[in-house]
Length: 309
Image (cartoon, rainbow, N blue to C red):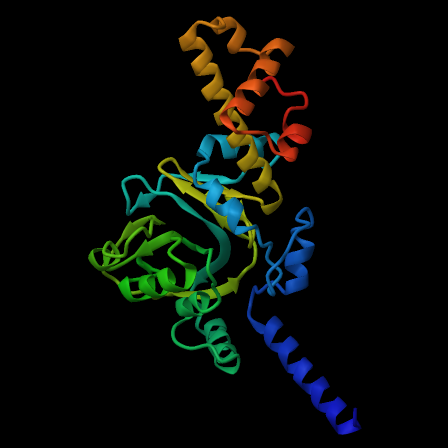
C-alpha cells in the first residue's frame, strides 16, 4: 500500500469516527456493547444485541405477567410502563428497541445539532433521522417527556415509513402523535403513546439515538426487546429473552396437562396446585411424548431446576 493510499484511509476512518461520535447523546458501538455485557449473542453493526427473529415470533404468545416474572426474578424491576393510549383493541407489539430522546428546545444547542446532522448527511427534520436508522424487526422507542401538544413524534407519512422499514412492528412514544385517521389505516401497526393532537412537533430537540432512556418508570437500553400488550409495555433485556420465551412455553404446557388431569379426575387440585411429585412429573413427560412434544435442552437444564411452578 502506498503512503498516499494509507493517508487517505486514515482520513476516511477519522471522518467516520468523528461522525459517529458527534451527535449529542449518541452511544458508540463499543459503548452499547459495554453497557449490555450480559448479552453474548450476535449484534447489529451499531452494537445493539440482535435477538433472533425466532424468539421475537415466539414472544408474541407470552403474557406481560410471564415476562415481568422473569425480569423481576433476575433483579430487573424497572422494565414495565403502563397507562398508554393504544391504537388497537388487542395489540401485540414485539421488536428490538431503537431508542431516542428529546429535550426542551434550546436554540444554541439545537443549532449545533442541526449543523452536525447536515454534515452527517441526515435528511429532513430530527424525528426522521431516527426512522432512517431502523431495520426490519426494530421498534422505535421515544422519550418525548410525555409531551402531547407540540409533541407529536409522527403523523401518517412517517408512520407509513416506519411500517415499511420495520416490517410492520409498531412504535412506542412517551409523547404524542397526529393524523390518527391516516395512521389507523395502516394494518397491524400498534402505536403506544400518551395522546393524539393535531399540532406539529416543535419546541424540542433530539439529544440522542440508541442511548439509555427512561420511559415512565422503565429503564430502556438499545436492543432491549419490546413486548407491548393491553396492560402496557415491558422492555426485556436481550439476555433474558430466551428464558422469558421458554419459561412461558413450558408453563403453558404444564397448565394444559394440569387442567386436563383435573378434568379427567386423575389428580386432585391439591396435587396439581403445588410442586409436583416425581410420579406426576413422569406422567407429564409421557404426556408430552404422546403429543409429539418435548422440552428443549434449555428447559430441561435451566428451567426445571428448583422450580415449584
